[in-house]
Image: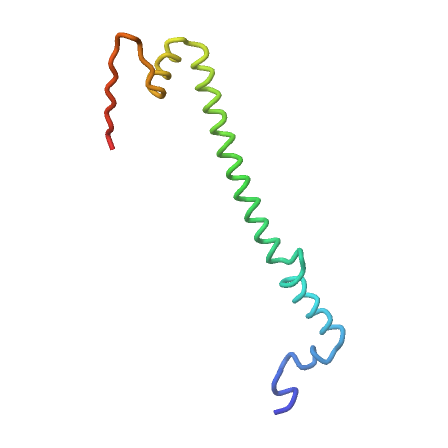
Length: 101
């Protein structure tokens, strides 16, 4: 089996030093370089996920600011919030906690 039979179509490409250099360059860029295409794809996915997280947290911040504004504007809402979340009570009250899991 000679050289042409084993590589077929690629035999002339492998004999030409410029095409061989170009092939090696692409292999290097795709797999081995610090900023390889594989790393770049991974980082782009990571950026996309972080942007989605950012949008989620910005929405959460808007909701929490609205709740905070509501609590600060009305003392009755503040008392209700304290009773529900921190189990605060008045001196003459009893609290019964019902777990509905």
